[in-house]
Length: 335
Image (spheres, rainbow, N blue to C red):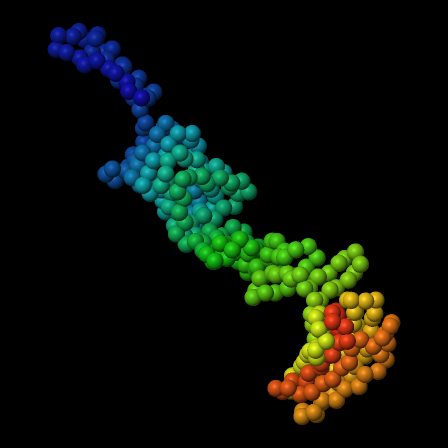
């Protein structure tokens, strides 16, 4: 604060001069900050408490020669400084709530300067607090270490390091931090329609109408083929619209030696059905078939033949009706 004391002129009385002198003495004892004696030019030491609404300095230094310093800065206004430095290498105690600042660029704390033994070191608050290398909280066994690229949390049995995801992982939106310390793809939504079984389609979840599971009936449905080991199980359906011979099925002679067919035929023009079981085998040059267990409801409505065409064993059907629906269950056995 400012204390105004009038000047003493040449024409003023001695008593006037005495009053001004008393005012100066009172101001020095009540309002001026006094310091201990210090022979170094520009330095001063204050014993007691120094308070200010605004503290402005280019460099604010806290130092100690006995290895211990207690700093308690309590403010609701401003600490303004380009560099706040604690000059000792190891500080035993920093009391709680040491920084509360409304200004930016307040603090640069060099490495390893804070070693707190108090349980209430809770708040370091600034718009720009910078640590030169890393911050460690805890002890040598249980601790957390924070630097500019990662956060490491450790205890006596495990260490986990959290790093930022890559740009592609972040953009994907389906990567989550795993307990093993990696970012792992965990798709949020299933693909396809209800009941479609999920499968890996080029590292993405996918579904298909040809591969479904009905949990009510516990039924798995595969639209075409199932391979178990080297054995192919396949379902085939075919519609004929004439009485000419047509290829019913074929398979590569280099891959499969034989096949078993269960064939159900429906005459779409009348109430007539046929069921036949056929075995087919080849020796690489010639194919052989046998039909057994043939049964029909009215008359025989189809005959079967086979041959080798372009390295494929081919099964043919010659229907009697002009319009039929043929359904086949086939098992191929490998060469």
